[in-house]
Amino acid sequence: MTELVLPVLLLLVASGVGVRLWLRRWRDERAAARRRVEAPNSHYSSVGVRDQEDRDRWGSIEVRGLHPLNREEVARLLELLDADGIGALSLKDRLFLDNMTLRRLGT
Image (cartoon, rainbow, N blue to C red; front, side, top):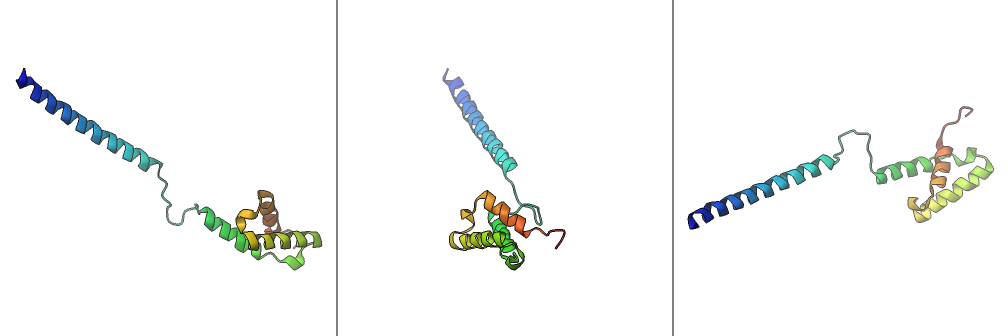
């Protein structure tokens, strides 16, 4: 009976180590498959980079060429942007500023 216990214990330990190694490799492969690595010159840019690009674009709005109502709103939003940062703008405000930066056909 004791002759059978040692081989069974060794088999259990070896199979436990094998299962643990397989599980670790499976988990690492799964994490690697979900990982997104940015390729050089890719279309992806971080939120901070996009916010900075938006801020630069909105800062270049030619305020003097706008209608007086739009001029006041752009000035108000740019002041808000300078005071509280880009996070203070709502989606509606961002869309308004984006529309003010688009080139119009008649201009």
